[in-house]
Image (cartoon, rainbow, N blue to C red; front, side, top):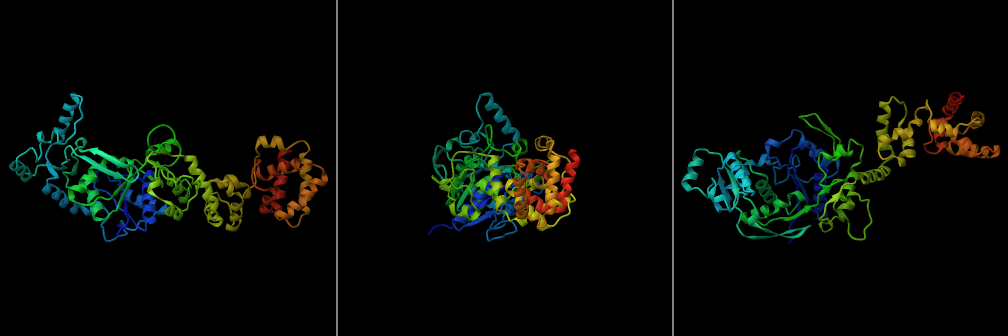
Length: 507
């Protein structure tokens, strides 16, 4: 019988969640739901010195905004909790002791100064200091010391760490679901610290114990954890447990230059790298977020899905809803190589999803902007405006520049447009246009078009000589949607008032 799929996203609350972390959460979620499995959030806060106030709340808020709900986690308790490692402290010591008893781990009493001296001596000989099989018997640990010496140090309360005893001269065969077969010579590995002197486990021990106890079937995480895979597989063997399947996701690379996209690259390069805005509680510095920049979560999710994944050869589909991603997702189609982040492509997704958004919902957001500007209007009027201008927008914040003329008359006119549109005889023509508009009782878009177009043709004036100065008059520059829609929207009285203002302005 196939093991139930259970995956976890296990961030550390050491700061805001980078979009690389959000992508890891997304791929875990897609994989779990594709296999009718469970997606678990686990907060890995064993390193108290790096804990940042508000970071855990930020992580949960970011997942909620991106519509990536977790089945088990903090405040969503399942039978495998608690889901914060700081609440599981008493569990880890027991498993560290098991490794000591089985001979897979040992006490190490070396001080920081002693280890630093070792590093300096090695560097002097142009070597790299690695604490493992080749020197562990010459250092201060329970392998090199007598049993009596060890007991004495423990009884005296001397600080110690517990290190893993890495096997010597073994070839470790591992399988990564994305990268295939991997071989490691265990002689090249160091004896990692599993348990610290402060009574807390390191990431490595806590991670393995929790994944086992929470019955995690697949560990899907970033490429930066690939070097830890050998230790983790060895730990599973040492405990006599079956290891989960591992999959290491490719790096997200900078849009220009070399290297991975870092937390510092965003605002420096002019785009967010965090799902939500983050204010550093210590410095007060603010980093921009996709939500606050006006991006829709659907656009961000669609963008992240393509950073290292595609549906397969021959597929040109680019727009996926979350259910469609769940249906299509497979680790077999995740790339080994890094993916360049493309801010412009993200905007392309944003433009698409803005067009799909309900006009009334967008109008409600725009209405708040208008209220802040002191504009008095109605939600129905704003909805009609949004319907007309949104195809040229990427964000709700673009709406004002695209539609301000629907709410207030222009006071100045674009000089280039005025030079092109307002000629010597334009005032005379605009007076005639005003007289013609005054005669029209039904001031609807169709009625205006059906009246004004034939009149222009009869006069033999030429459409450009009428429509260009009229657009300048109503908008202030040569932009905007259908002119008859603008006139119908602002109404007859306002249209005539703007024509009068322009005539006086240019005369």
